[in-house]
Image 1 (cartoon, rainbow, N blue to C red):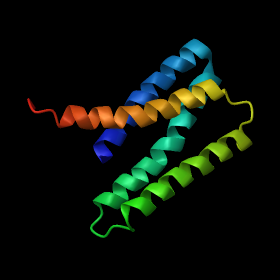
Image 2: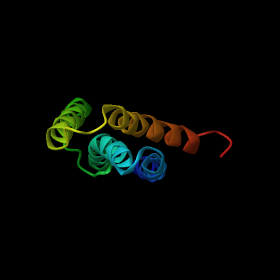
Image 3: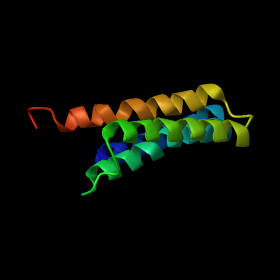
Amino acid sequence: MLYATGAAAAVIAAVAVLAGVLRGFDGGLDLLLGSLVVLVPSCWVALSLTARRSTGGAVWVGLARYTAAAVGFALLFALRPSSSAEMVLLGSILALLIPPIVLAWQQRPDK
């Protein structure tokens, strides 16, 4: 899971550079920040689930993950009110979709 999150970060960084070229620096930065709001709690979950001692039940870890993401979005728009909501949303969607795709690719039967 940690590998999938890292792969997602690499893909999103490339997409953010492309968005920066096409929509300007702020567009690429907004995409990157939107993805970080989702990827940072995902990394925490991946690390806590792979640790020898889990920090709690899966329900509590999931609740903490989504709470951290909600706080991250609130902070992002409070600190950067001029952020493009579309680019932030695109970054968060990519951060939600890419890790499961990478995991499915890793676990395909013909590997």
